[in-house]
Each structure stands twice: as C-alpha cells, then as structure tokens.
Image 1 (cartoon, rainbow, N blue to C red):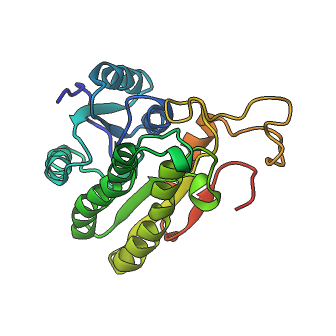
Image 2 (cartoon, rainbow, N blue to C red):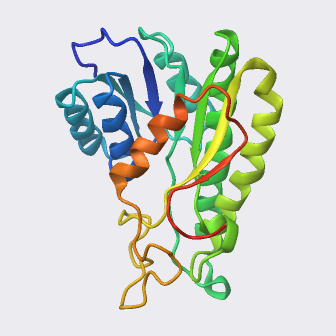
Length: 248
C-alpha cells in the first residue's frame, strides 16, 4: 500500500476500481472537494498510482489498496486497512467490474462465471465488508455503480447485463436491511462511457444516440460530480440514479 503525505482531510472515501475510467473520475471529484481517497485496484498498479498522483494534484490525499474483489478475505483485509486510516471512510463506492462481449448463444461458460463472480459476487463481498464500520459509526453512504443494461439488456452483453441486473435487487435489499442504522445504499447508472468495459459495445453512426433525448451520452465529469453529491445526501437510500437521458 502506498500513501501520500497529506492526510489532513476531514472526510474519506474508498473507491473500488479506481485505476482508470469512471473510478478515476470519481476519485478526482472527491479529491477536488478536499476528501482523502482510497484508490483500489486489482492488477494495474501503475494506473492506480497515476490516479493517486492526480488525486494529490487535485487537492486531496489518499492511499493505494490492492484486492481481488472475487475473494472475500481480500476485500475484508482491504476494508480493515482503510478503516485504520485517519479519517476513517464514511463513503464507499463500489465501481470495480469487468465486461463481456458475446452473444447469448455464443457465451462461454467460463467467461460468464468470471463476469458474474466479479460484478455481482464481488460487489456482495464489498457490501458485506463495508456495512459494519458504517453501522458502528452511526451511518454513511455506499454507492454501487450499475448499468442501464441491467434494466434493459444489451445485445452481446448477456453476462454483463445479468450481473448488473443482480445489483438492483442487492442494493434494494441492503438499503432496507441497513436503513435503521443510517447506512444509505444507492445504485447509480453512469450511461455510455468509453472504457475498457465498453470497448466494442459503444454505439456508432449517425443514429447512435437516438434513445437519448439529449442526443448525447453524459460526460464522465458530470457522472463523478453526481456520485459526490449523492454520497453527501442524508435522506436518500434504496434509489436508482440514471445519469443519462434515456428512460428506465
């Protein structure tokens, strides 16, 4: 684990899958607001270190955390390490996940299993580890990054859509079970973003954005600002936030 030398922030957040893409944008939004940011990664340490460099440059502080979210013990150890920091995280962002690019009839079973165990079971591991410290301190916020595909499916994305659909029930259940402890759990749909998950699946052509009433996808920066805003709302839980202009 690496740590910056600036740890005077009053608030802390842990972002899973923060080595790039949406996770990095979320980390920078919190950093710009003066938060200490826990930057989680699994394999790409160099990219995570780059995120942490940007976090510090944006005015935040932070530390690196490596964990395979498919492994319950690894997630638990990461949470314990993050809770030994000062300040202790009061917000957790479950962003880590992988994609898949196969039609249903051509879906490889091994890839299917890996997508489900990472996106759905991995998030389950994170939620189960994140809730106790928040309940112990009297509340906090967990935001899970979902997908429009979880509601409507997507051609060539059977495993991914199924894993994201599972998050809907998981988030609603967690919100109901932990609400009395003031732990807010919400699901955020970031819309189309050019990341490693969307490679080969991004819409192309003149009619690409016909389903979006604004005719465009959301910016990554606006998504990150929405996550920051939602994390600080005290009276909202069990909700789905859609960040683009498509209907659910």
